Image 1 (cartoon, one colour):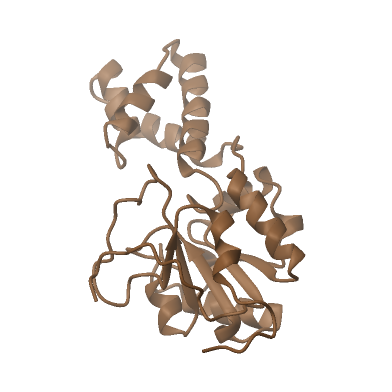
Image 2 (cartoon, rainbow, N blue to C red):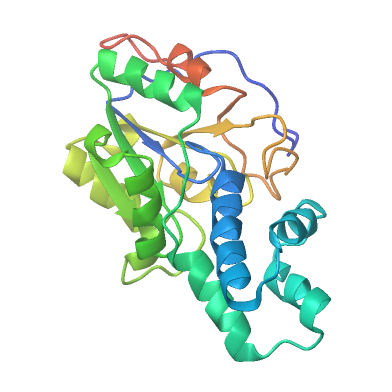
Length: 246
């Protein structure tokens, strides 16, 4: 089998009782969150220093910079940047109230799952406080049967990846077996290896232009069982309830 994902169309041979979603770039565009944070940072810098930096932040980000967007922007205007100034900017970014919206196909997909009495949950990596603000901004919590913030788990040995305990905890909460779960994510580098080891079926959402749309699984076991380009295709992969499984 090639390590490169292909667009599988055949059903998953699964009639899931619950679907678990990754959050960032799966249910909403993470770039929207980033630009929302840039707006908060730009407002802070304009208020304190009288400078307009939003366009600079966006241009540096779109050029491919991720780790040092704020440092590069501030250095452009100030030269050397004091650590305290950078820390304040980072604090503004990570604590801002985000202005984000669900993908339209995510809304449709969840409605289709609800209509089939399939439970819906979210497993999200990242700091719990930050991810909770995203969930609140998206008004997701009333729609979900369960949420796990994996970086808040005591034994999160693999930060940035779905934690194995998260799947066990949600399976217990939702009163389903691991084999009755389906996990949907976008990043083949991190999202699918752990659930696959647990026997959870996996689906990759690969939207054109997404942050990880061109990423390839680094090894066998990292690829998803199926790949789709829209979440509206997800329910079509599932067998009807009570169908015999191959």
